[in-house]
Length: 174
Image (tube, rainbow, N blue to C red; front, side):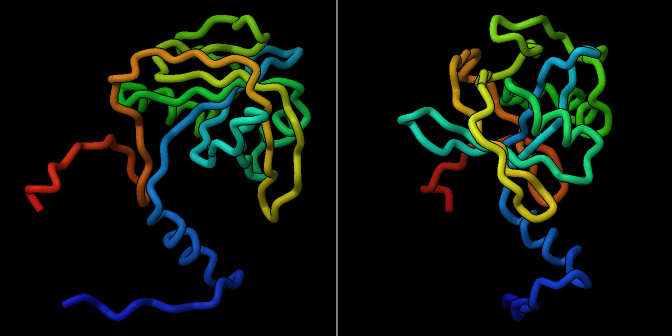
C-alpha cells in the first residue's frame, strides 16, 4: 500500500523539502567550462536542457551563491560537456572546485574554451542571453559547434542526491 502524499506550500522553511521533491526528477550530469584571463574554469551542472533546434539553443542555470556564478554569466563563450558514467571523479571535482582543470584531461578547444576528454558530447556555445531566475541565473547559449563522441557510452546520471547510470529494462519483464 502506498503512503499518502506529502503536500506542502514551498516556503523558505520548506526549502529542503522542495529540493528533495525536485531531486525526484533524475537528470544527466554536465560540466560547463569557460576560459578566463586567469585560466580555465569549470562547474558541474545538472540544470542543462535543449531549448531550440532553430536557432540551436541550450540552457543551464548556475546558482547565484556559487563563487563561479559571475564568471559564467559574464563569459562570452562556454562549453557544455555531457559526462560519461566513468567520469564521476570529474563531476565531483568540478562540483566543489572549478579553478583550473588539473584533475581533468583537457585541451584548449577551437572555440576558445577548455575541452574535457572522455565526454559523450560537447556543445560549444556563445552566450545568447542571461536572465535572473530566483536564486539562479538562466544562461541561454547559442550552439555554434557540437562534438559527438562515444554514443554507446553510458551517461552519468544524478537522481535524489546519488550518481549512477541507466540500466535498460525490458518492458516484458515488468
